[in-house]
Length: 210
Image (cartoon, rainbow, N blue to C red; front, top):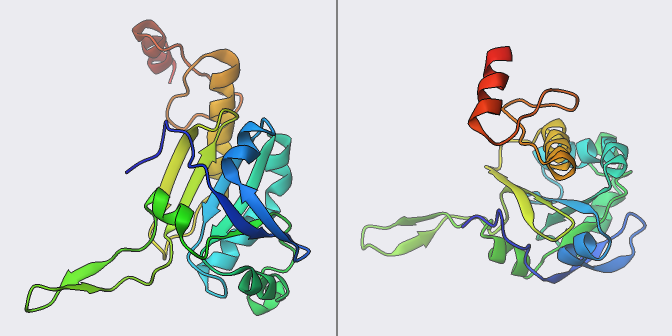
């Protein structure tokens, strides 16, 4: 079930910093207590293939998120020890050395299960019994949480499909525009482009110009 429009689940989860420091992070608190937006992105597993490209992509855009008063947090179900080993593996060896935002270690899948993003792939055998085919890891789920703790965006990709970090920044820009101006943002809206009031007249005016 989608959590869009709802308050993000209130869980405190183990995490690790880029320096290898063990942390406890509550994503809801990060948003509400610090009055900032939070991007939480889940990836399936450390030491895999598409995953490091995404972690580095978020790192490359980190200053863009910071200028938007947005905190980036990564997450998987690996342990802090495995995170630490990956953080100390060079980029040219498939590692994530240089990543500076925190990474959750949801090893008990407490938060991942609450969000419904753990791979739960079953089939039935000839006797009609369920056979679990899943890998007990998460899909590539992305959440944007606003300053009230409300989830304003959720997306879930299957494991082979990497994300577009620029689209996440665009969504933050669009929601910030809504917050500041009370307008709505049409399809493909980008910062500086025409937005609309939420009424028929404004929609007609927008369509006539676009």
